[in-house]
Length: 276
Image 1 (tube, one colour):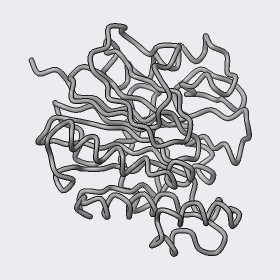
Image 2: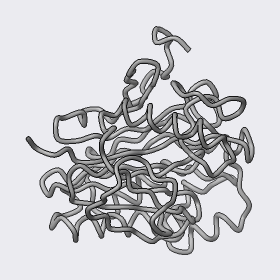
Image 3: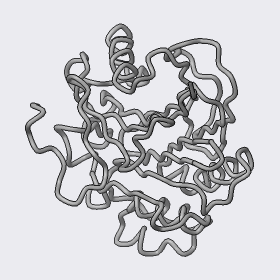
């Protein structure tokens, strides 16, 4: 896909940014000197087949050597090639990992612990999660100098992972929810996400208000997460929600539902830069 090609539909709030052959999606207005915040795409890597091309995840069975090169290229594109990267074993739960200093530079092969969200107020540390239909969310407490990343599929949504991450970020950085900005990245759209009644019931168990977001046998995960953030106290104007469907955007994004077990993943990455 050439850089000159039009990749994003009209009205999409995330901005496409090219770094050589690597294409990243960025929240508008977040590209400041003090912050790195991106969602990766499938463009610019070296993997083959259904993993083509920018797959930074080992969990789907891709060649570890190709994944390592993808990670190197991705970190170089973000400007954080010499940062340590915090990763967790994602289990579709509500646990939030608090990240302090990390000594190992780069993207480690092993995860630190089981969790589906990470928060930190440390500079020079990159928080990472990977997705291929679930919702990736970036949080930025600008006044409190803190960031968070969230992996929210339907199970994590039902369990309250987003609420837990907002609350932990507020505690860690001594800020209020209305001082937090959020960017909701690409996820599978409701037209491509039919679910059974049991999924809807699990979400409604703790989110009884989510009738519209779980109607007609489908789940609108992005809208669900946006409403959860609003109910947690974030200002609506501080929430950017991508409308890119991972299943529909085959040229740009990976999708587990579309491609099956041998699907690549996108990464959501956020970190505070060290001030010189």
